Length: 468
Image 1 (cartoon, rainbow, N blue to C red):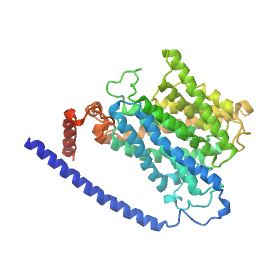
Image 2 (image 1 turned 135 degrees about the vertical axis):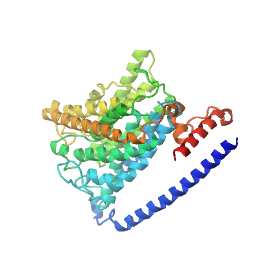
Image 3 (image 1 turned 90 degrees about the vertical axis):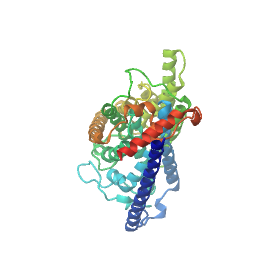
Image 4 (image 1 turned 45 degrees about the vertical axis):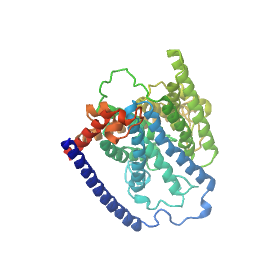
């Protein structure tokens, strides 16, 4: 008893020291940022002509930014309902941590790497927009001529945020949280930012080639999907995983809520990519809803035929897959084409590579088939409208994006092995909610009726102290 009490007292002192050091470190970081704010004062305002700003366009882009922001916690809900109950908090926590982490990365240097002036070869932007210096109230005609450059920046931030959040489904229930944080920071910098530069920066090599990606089929979904494939290979299988065996969803209503919020947020994702309250935004809005509906009905019908019952989980998953596949085409195709694109998607639940990787690839390729210049004059016609070369261009964009995301992710995770990519078998058995966060998703019984959890938490705390 004395030993246990001593360990608990030692653990309390250890936590107090860590908190004190953390507080000092936070103050130091705050001082550095304060000095930076003075150095870059006014960099995110700057002179501008008020009549150059369209208030309706600005309002729509800001509203769309908020819609896309909701999608990141929605991913947490969608995945959280499908994992085992002992890991639901960890998945939702991961999505919120990514929201915070990438928000800061984007403001500091991520936006500059993606949308800053090209530093050679159409591969990457420079640091001219570091700390949002020069990203102010005046529109940037290279991206959006009727809204503040700052509004364009925050809209694009939400895309950068959700992309790594999509990957977490590939290694759910076994990733070590500290490794995840570093991985997300490095992946966003080394994978997402360059690919966004290739496709969406006017100086990017894929943009110059003529690749079409209205809202992220290659930049967001193909990149995250093939990164997820690499991550699943490197991190490895869950303990006790059997090929072909699906994880039983712990909370179907939570997954349906996540899917509904994703559907809702996707209107900002796609229609917001028009960057104006315009007819193009209306078209993108309509085809987004149509594609999601067609895919949801398809999945529902298939589950009905296979199991004799229309699965709610399959319907929700089908809607998300439809949204993924229409994303790159949403600003270039009409409503009937959006239905045709959806009919090609067959997928497994919680398979990030299949849903996002192959969904994004499918949508990007079919953009080269169904794109119509009459829908978007800034785009191009596809194969069905007299331009077979567009399909070849889309194929090059897909291969380059998928290969780069897969290879860099694979190498990055191999380099992070020294930190420990995954939790131990015992920790995995206990569940990440308790082990990593000390919190439970569901309190099935009062804590006093579950004394074994106190023992587990004490053992984990002692292990942390001993390692330190």
